[in-house]
Image (tube, rainbow, N blue to C red; front, top):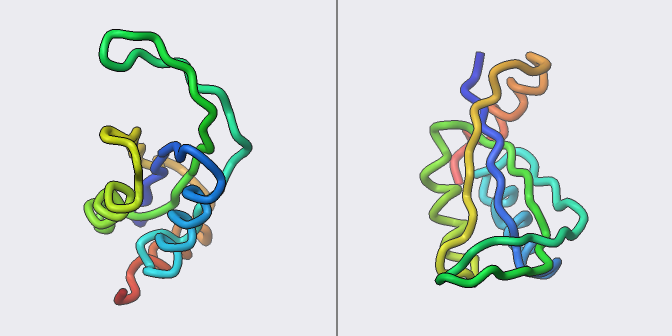
Amino acid sequence: MPEVLAVFTNAPDETVAGTMAATLVESGLAACVNVLAPCRSVYRWEGAVEQAREVPLLIKTTRARYPEVQAAILAAHPFAVPEIIALPVEFGLPAYLAWVEAETSRPC
């Protein structure tokens, strides 16, 4: 079974989210990116509790492409320390997981 990852990040707005999603898919680093509905994030930053409207992205990629995905997010993200969390996909429809593997194994 392919080593598929679900990577989560948040963008500050729809424009940044859309640009990141398109870049990741067009470059072959992700098979699919879901740009989710905006949400309100509450977090502690530099000693203060902050609140911000953010746009979550759910990125489907592979373990092999993760370093490039992380680098692409960092290059496009305006935050000093963006949230980037990768979780292994333990189970899934085999045909879907194979599709993610095929889409991310093509040369950039």
